[in-house]
Image (cartoon, rainbow, N blue to C red; front, side, top):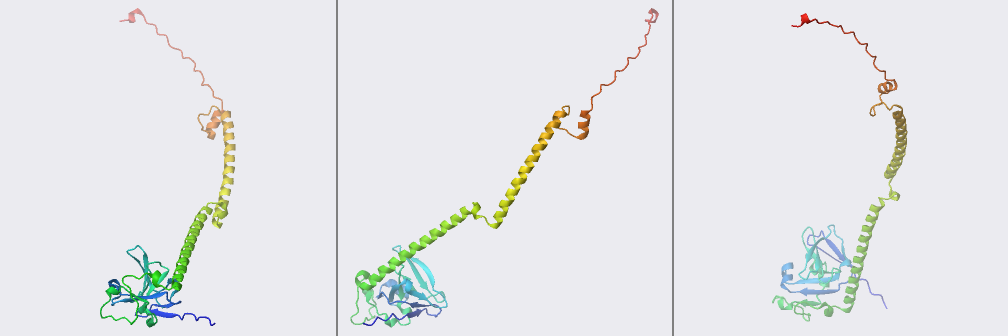
Length: 275
């Protein structure tokens, strides 16, 4: 039994040709939509989509696709890829999961290979649009769980699981990087994380401590000497230890000489002198 041939890579791109992409796998499903929203968004009378796993779309052009975010009414976040130069819409992630994308079939180089498996919103179809004989149709949205082949449903589940695992791994990486950053901050506070400059600062601190102790010892010795000098010169007032004051304090205080009493002349007064 011969092995199945690998899916030939199909290319697509924008109107101006600067943004190009390649499909690395066969599509999950193809469908056409005749709702008025698709008519307005594409500027055509109906839209065609080729659904494939997002991870198997590879940008190959000189200009990478521009990714914009759109929040659907259901709350689902949708990522839309367009050409940043001409604005051609190339693909958008599906409403069910960002793991799958709906490529605008008209942007493929060989759109004729992607004939729709179903035409949805057939009630809104423009009357003069004629569908091929035997084309499958449905009113409103189609139920992908009923319309998609079993193999495509399995691929969808596998793609969603891979995306969830990737998201968990990315969260672990972010958490690990955050913890590493916190550890580095804490490590900066410990001696084991000293940089050469910090090591020099630590050595300077040790030298400062040594000199501080020496200075403190010298000051203590001076204090003891000063205490002895103060005891020796108790007559010195305050802490004035200038040499001349200390010398003066050492010399005995001599009492001033006693002045000899002077003779006071005696004056005799007679009665005749009294007025």
